[in-house]
Length: 509
Picture 1 (cartoon, helix red, strand yellow):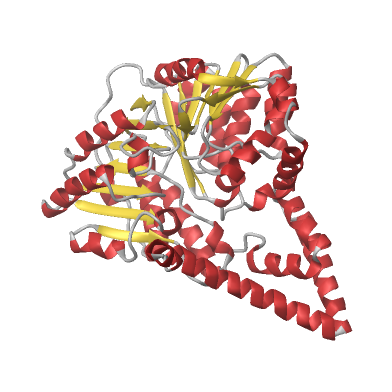
Picture 2 (cartoon, rainbow, N blue to C red; picture 1 turned 60 degrees about the vertical axis):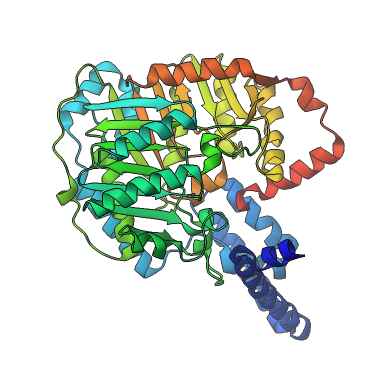
């Protein structure tokens, strides 16, 4: 009884119930008016029609459109109620001003060195096209003078994080979707507290929804009491808003602008297997040392300004970069915003799949695909390219796992090989193409990552980490279960029906 009482009064439950009550109130109001007023019912039908026409004309994913059109046409009162509250991705005037300021900071501070692009063009025209997109559209330069190191699991990455944090002299910037109290965070926090006492500028951004079950309410005040500046991204409050869907899913650890970490690893014990959840937790991280860390620094500062509504100049945080020894290859960190109308993460993956000549290897915890991504993977496999996808063997969310499995059969029919990670849950977000290109970052192959969340990643070409990324795939395939086409065809009828329903509404989940 005590545990039930505690659960009922958790903030996530209270806030969610308040939002649900608001939805029910709006829906019941519309039902009442439509029952007692013919004219209101006609007006509602007109609104539904206009909403469908708007959805059709919007420049958004077709699967996302279909997921809204079906409930609006099938259940007009309920469908239009939900759409008016949460549909679309409307941006207010104040948010638009902030987005313009973020873009201007990127434009002013992230300037492409033309010599680097010329070197890339001489080596590989296809790589240059990918770089052109990220430079021109996402305002993310490509760098040459950057060392990269890939971590196939969380434990060595954590050890390296602590090592680099201990060297900080000027500033430490952390931005994470999940921070959870426990061994991992406690050890990092101890270093942050020590550095803050030494005068190092320490800042933390965490997503409120991602941490709602991990951190107590008002945790940011505890950090501020330790001398650590802390901001909470998009507080989860009991007010209906489309912005509730837009979460900060990025993971950045930046030390003095010289060293940066990103990847799938959050700051919680399951990511280093100090706490077991869903078997062995496999995640990846990537370390950058050199000029490319400047892009990550500007990305952090621009979001910090977005949250605080402050226009802090970034140039004061730019360090001097010593030349790295040896051939470093090309490194291009990028960020993706759900509010600018450009699906950067999706385009990066589609470009990589489209330019593949020999192989496409992907690790992802979720496989919830739209038509474009499915067709790209199927076409690559049909042309003889070795396409392999690694997904979890033990799921973290059962309905998401059902959606992931719903995508297996059409991919398998085309020749795509599916591997489930037998030891447990795989949280890595890694793609390797032809052994020459790689993307390591925070982007899952699902609608939330591709269209609704703030994300980041690193595009690598001929970089020092590529051999490590390739080796990770080669080491992981043998400990996976390869899903056969026969297994997909043996799916029970009720499972097929349930998965089909989930697929229709998957863009809204």
